[in-house]
Image (cartoon, rainbow, N blue to C red):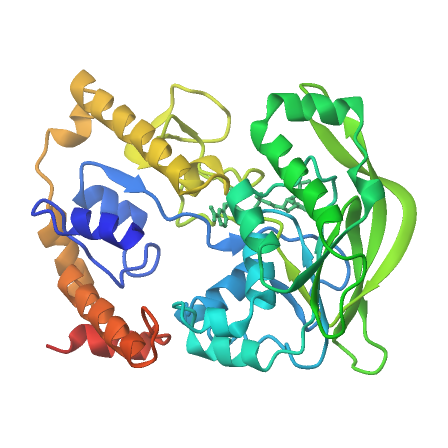
Length: 413
Ligand code: NAP
């Protein structure tokens, strides 16, 4: 659906698509703003939040983003090579939808994954994986889990999976009740988890894959293996309790009690982070571009009158890494409404009065720098080739996972 939607836009005669162009290296933001009357930044969040605890750089500790890039065939993620063979236990930190995606990939029968568009290097590694137990660790309780119902149901519905949730973790307080009253999603998640806690047998059968939901635990440090120096062997977790901070929200507070959870691989799924380019105003604390309804503000002071004329932002770069695809649709509409309003009110007059070089100027600069622009028609070649290769393996698509291969197919007639 996403491909269809984007293709419709890209094929519109008024749209030019320039692929393989990186903001900040192929072209600077200052240059783009000189070339166009309006620039809208929509480049998302391609980095990760860090936990900031000892041991984070041990081998075997990966960010979920890297892992997702790896199994999705992103060219910059294909060399991750996570070790799934030397351990039977994986710990995932976080309980959002990305954490569930990662758990699903680790636990789903590979015969089912084989007919999806998963990258073939990932499928091979998963076929040889010895991981049987996955722990999804959340610092708060089942009422506060950050996932959504459809995604949780998909994980709970994995074939022949033993699910473990401690019944004592499901006890709720009046503050939890209040939270659920205010959020249908949280109530639904809690109901699904409560049902899953009692639905299956109390013990796994031999060899059965296991998914453990661990609540009220926050990572304190990553443990290093005794026999394999430099490698992770577990996570030191602190038990937590919840504390209300007004407006119905509860945060996790450490209790000073600790326990170890052994594992051979850790996937940190605690959120993505946007990265700034050039001298773009950026709020490092929140990881977003300061803005008012999509209009980029000149600094973080919160002064709503100092706009960067002609510069707009939308998506995760504007709001932070939250929300599903539909949330980004509304977000984009808000930004476009601001842009249209500014045009009508003449706010952009100082930039729109003079003609700008636009497309021709951009192509000239990129050509001078030997940047190989990939137009939409070339992307369509990649799409066609990936589908053809997928057809040979009974998959909807076989992703091309190196820049060389992608550019080669893009350039073929
Ligand atoms: P997320 O929903 O924000 O979840 C982050 C998780 O990490 C939460 O459980 C959070 O706990 C925990 N966390 C954050 N900081 C932590 C810390 N220092 N220590 C321990 N735990 C910490 O982020 P996400 O899973 O990366 O997803 C990003 C967005 O993409 C979400 O809006 C998600 O719904 C969306 N998404 C949607 C789909 C889909 O629609 N199928 C798929 C993937 C992603 P707290 O709640 O306590 O902060």
